[in-house]
Image (cartoon, rainbow, N blue to C red; front, side):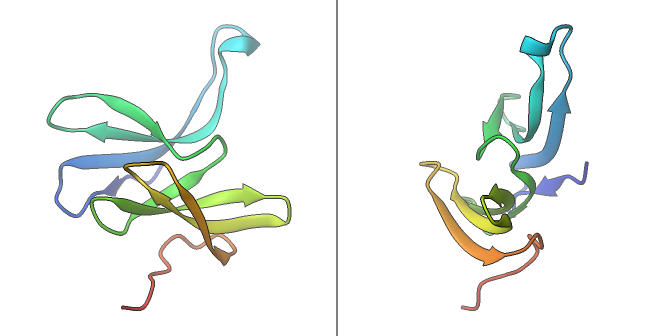
Length: 97
């Protein structure tokens, strides 16, 4: 787990996996975001997303799985909309201004 801090320091995200007491309670690899003001956690992106990097308070990059392999994907943190950005698995890739 490598945590990622949102630029304003209000939230932190990390890749997680949860093994439940039964197979039905297992959660695959996913990204968790913690709001430090409220203490509430939420899942960001889709199952098997990992390695979140914040672009700003409203957008993040994650490494997502596609039919053809890994793809760095932009996730809108408000709506959950996903936009493929770059094939591969390097979430530190930054768009050019």
